[in-house]
Length: 239
Image 1 (cartoon, rainbow, N blue to C red):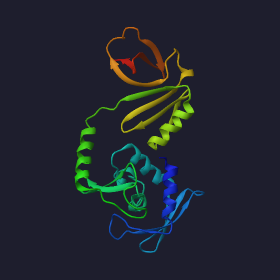
Image 2: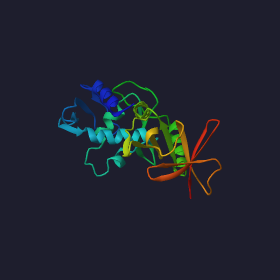
Image 3: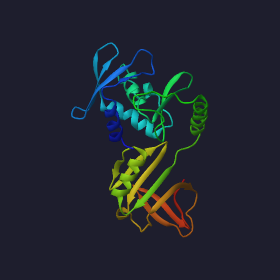
Image 4: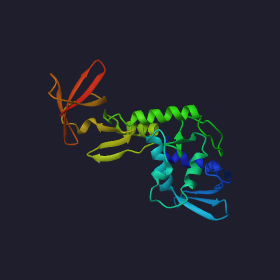
């Protein structure tokens, strides 16, 4: 699911009074303005406000990448009334909220709808506790790199973006990159490689010596040694 899809879902909330997680900060969504790239709303005191798409996109990308998102942290230094974009997104049916890190509000992107449009849902306390433990465990896990080699980069790139909700970044000579949940994903067209390499997904690991029968591959000015056998695809870089 991509940011554009989320905007389309926000349009279903136009005209509704949306309850805020923060008491007394309800708002009414008036317009999703795709021309001026902002959201127009009316605050609980009757003031008319607007929030830029860029603000919502920051939150959305964080939701796609992380198990839980603290909006104040994502929008640090972005201005006041951060509960307004939080309220908008929390009222989508696939977003739940919970307290983590003490009493800090967090938003969580769920795999599918768990409540109706224009309503809030607080995550079950047991599930929130499990999520907190999982986040603590993930912090100790070192991030890695995965390389996808393909002869149809357009199809693979589009599928990955739709799957993760995170846009790819062009980094060099037809190579694209995405960072997701601490994992670096590189998508590489066959045509830019210096040596033949079968299409597939390769896990990048570090090693001390060149593996026997490995072929040398240069990707983004980095040297790797490719080993493939019975469905196992590895790219080794030397320490």
